[in-house]
Image (cartoon, rainbow, N blue to C red; front, side, top):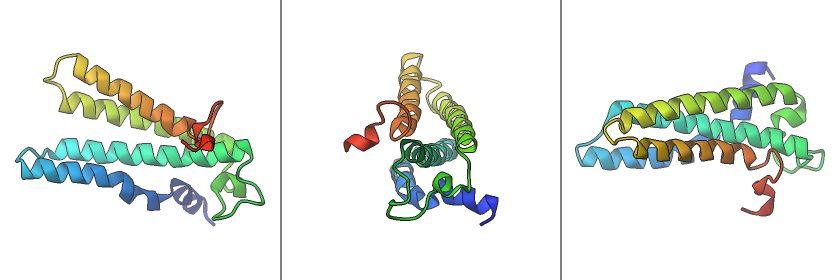
Length: 150
């Protein structure tokens, strides 16, 4: 499998429709109310895409490091497990997608909430940082909550 195909497989694009569904629903409601904003929609979809891919990459990495993805694993072989992507490469991709998610998320917040003072954007930035942390901590790092049935 080519390097590009391995990375695309690691992104798990089949998970995107569910991730996009809430953004599309919100956009449809905004459109029905005459409040649709294409820039907000584009930034929201982009941020959602980046957060979902980040979550999938962190899951691949975390399961490999914790030993969950091993020879007895049922289901498709994961990118790091198969050796198609090394653990250090995956860690760099996680850092990259964390940064990209943060950039697009903060841009979205300030674009959409520029007229809402300081507290509203700050609260959403904190929620965004929690989202990035949750995406990574699901299976990676100490106290990974994905193994606790949460």
